[in-house]
Length: 239
Image (cartoon, rainbow, N blue to C red):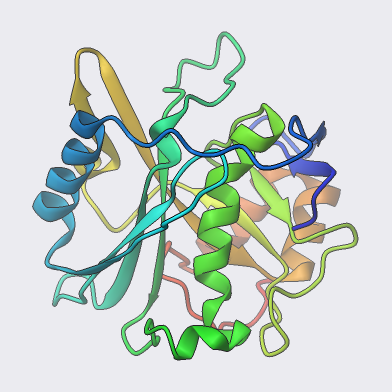
């Protein structure tokens, strides 16, 4: 993703492209999460997703501190689940009438053997899903916008691959299909809830499908391919 002008393809409403300008000229330090929010996310992850293998902490952060929980594979979820904690430090700018929470966190589900150690992160072909989580988590705060189900963001304009060895060049925000409904929302208390959404990387042809034919065409293609948020780095394009 590039700085400056950002374009987001609209969600369930259709194929519209929304362009946004960055609101900040320079570094804006994170103020940190409220402890009750961090604790609620921690409890929710432990209850609904399984054993926590570790947390990728951010020491210095722009706008929001995006820490990433790494959940071990289980029999029920045979992949590594990465979930952010920190995107909800600030509310998103959600237009009136949408009826969704202005607070969100993101997940991406990687193959069980995907390396997540610091040495492996030197290789962009390994690190790019982690970078993607951080970028999309900051996106609404950087550009004064919001992300919700079926919003998608190409990796630049024109869209290019996230790393040299991957063909994926954009991402769509999807509901989590591999967990029960109660796992999709973090209840902080006091009327505050955090939506938990997943990121699904897209091939260039899939991005083009949404641009040209709208969200429903992309959803139908994903359904035909029986695609969930469990990311398969070797899957072929659906179109």
